[in-house]
Image (cartoon, rainbow over the protein chains, first blue to last red):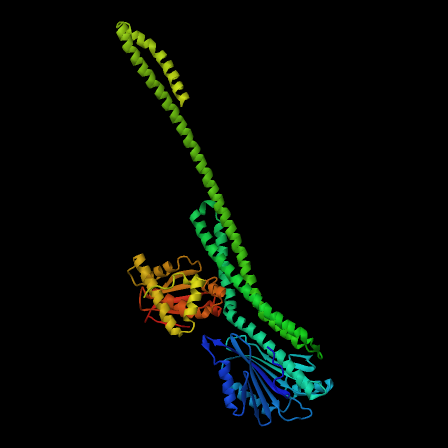
Length: 425
Length: 157
């Protein structure tokens, strides 16, 4: 979204305030509602195209809402209606009081607030002197200083929202050095445009970060207890094979598979967020690149310090993914080990089964041989009995001797019959 | 009341998403009542299934173990007369499911997780209090749910 140059005059004090649209599941008043409230507060004001303009004494106010899906952002500017040739940044109580009044009309639970105070000077040398005098008078030590849009830009104070409920605040002083007031106005509005863009990017990043804060805070503990469990499983696998039963391995496999899939889901979801945070980071880097910020004295530039801050904000996403991945590698090793172990156990079971089948086969063959022999004996007895009947009928006196002599013949005949029968089979 | 959310809701991103969409604009106390009833219904079903009769800590342990039988990060132990501790360590299944669907983990814990388990154990003894002694979302090493005989309250942190 482009702020452009919505009102005439040099903004002497500007604020960009952001709000979470939903805090702890409770909604804040909508943008239209808030702007209407401000417009009603300043009776002579006008509400056009989602922005409020009003005049009060020597001031001209402008309030507009910036884009933001899950949060709201407002840009508030106060300009002087008078036309002094040059002015410093020192005497501004009239602006500060007015701004406090407008900020109080915005929703509660502010998420971040950026305050920009401006001056103006016709030469670079004078602008630097104005900035130094301002910092000295207020006993401020700048965090970063640089030259952007023909202006000296100093970030003098910053409070990061590291804990839930704390507001992120930033105070910036800008002194354009332009020969005409018109040019100074152009530079300050261009700067406000960029700062509004940065507030939007930062808002998106902060929102993502705040949603994942609880997950980042538990990684240490979860990692430690998962590591302990991994060590226990490794110790269990290292036991002698006869002590590890297939049921134990199966339960290990189930547990490790559940843990592995859980970590995979966590890693891929956090990678998604990391990619998203990286895209916000790229947008910011691209904007700072456009600034091509010049250095001032020994101070680090604003863009360098800002980028460093944003990179540090994005780092926890990558750290989370790396730590979870390290655990996944170990779980994968366990999965492989358990699978190998189960494979070995199955193989030895199958070898034992094969051995047992072979013995059973030998026993069956032996039994069959015995049955064959028994079969031949039965046939021989049967033939001998038949022969005895025949011998009795021919000559009763010699029948017994003939029968006894016939027994070897009967045996030979039974062998021949047996072979003939089995050959047919 | 029927059991309208499955017993394994805490590992089921689909169920959690539907729960969020259904309840995101309701008052937390109203959602907690629903979640408590869901836990109570499941607890009663498990008691019937397991043939449990008592109302002491052993019965509480049996119901919790039955409800969490496939969850490797949960352990249930007796910590005193009439006191049972459900400890979740490692990566929270609910956190992972919420992370994957971009759902508010701590909110779901507070309106679904805690009242559900309170209801589950209340099936054994309606006078059971549940309090969260430790929470991973706060950076503690575990999530400790302490159940003890009292006035049947869910004591929120």
